[in-house]
Amino acid sequence: MGSIKPYETAKGRRYVVQFRRPDRTSTSKRGFRTKREAELFLASTEVRKATGEWIDASASRITIDELGEAWLRAQTHLKPSSFHVLNTAWRIHVQPVWGHRRVGEIQHSEVQDWVSLLSSRKGATVVIRAFGVLAGIIDRAVKDRRLPLNVARGVNLPRKGKKPRSYLTHDQVQNLAHEAGPRRTLVLTLAYTGIRWGEAVGLRANSLDLVRRRLLVRENAVNVAGKIIPGTPKSHESRSVPFPDFLTELLLEQCEGKAIDALVFGDGVTHLPTPTHGDGWFAGARNRAHDTDPSFPRALTLHDLRHTAASLAISAGANVKAVQRMLGHASAAMTLDTYADLFDDDLDAVAVALNDARSASIAVKMQSKTFDDEF
Image 1 (spheres, rainbow, N blue to C red):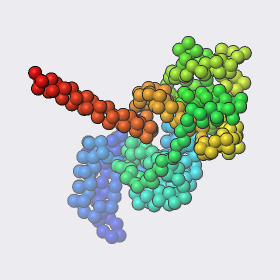
Image 2 (tube, one colour):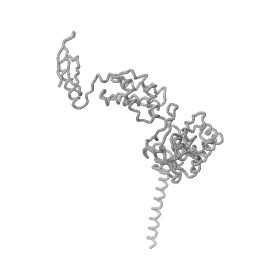
Image 3 (tube, rainbow, N blue to C red):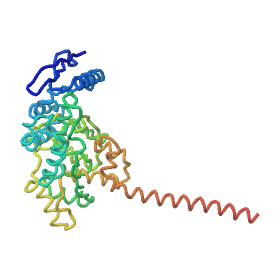
Image 4 (cartoon, rainbow, N blue to C red):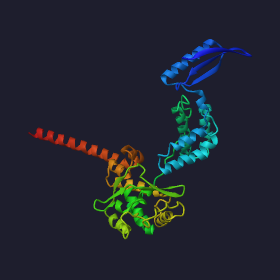
């Protein structure tokens, strides 16, 4: 239990409360005008200590800069690409504005004003990511018992707009593959298996099961700040992905003369770099495909080949669970959320099936009634 002592000031008598923190170190708070105020403070302090709700006011004087560096160090479990975007958001958007501020002085309205201003200059993805970094740092302060709550939570954030997707037909995939020249097999692999670019360029000869027609996806090579860094797939788990039979010979050709652990695509040693969006080989193939077929999407991206694989699989009758496993989604719900538009035909099929079942049932009953009436 703490103690209360009076002391004299130029403005009269005041009281100081001396007490121990939860770690048993001593501290005090001065300036109470009456002994009653001091007693109430001491009583509430003892209750908060007993319930684990006590916050040391001095601990909230730490700056966002100090907390931010520690928070970033705790994110090293993330994939290099994910860590890079968080670090970039911290350096460009969060640290310059909030780095010098004491965490205990930040107000909810200030965070909202910052988000609103940033939203007027940047897209929703950038804003949400920057806010997530700041909120994550303040969350750390709350967990460390520096603050009672996170004032950043509850801020109104911009909504992400849905990016239009391009789904290619079989003929359009063939057209693109033809225009890709030496990258033909790579394009077909992306469009018919749905694996990510980094997973495709990380495929090795011993990742191919030509008997079962499966790709063992266990490596993902991503571009981080201009450097290709190989690692595990996005889900941190390997997966087996089926491929159509026509790819067998094409994949064998890619592996011809290479070691068993060589990369399938490229020279077998160096991971292929991600083609530039505007003037790389993929952009050239896309533009030439559009020239020969005006319906070919001019804005097609590499990732749209993954969407195309999902579309072709669903149109071929694959169920949502099979598509989930093929794409490596965490859950079937994620697959449904991502490709809900592609399952609209399934809804039409349900309506048709219900109608046919009802008609068949009524027809049977009518035939039975007619038979009874005749006899």
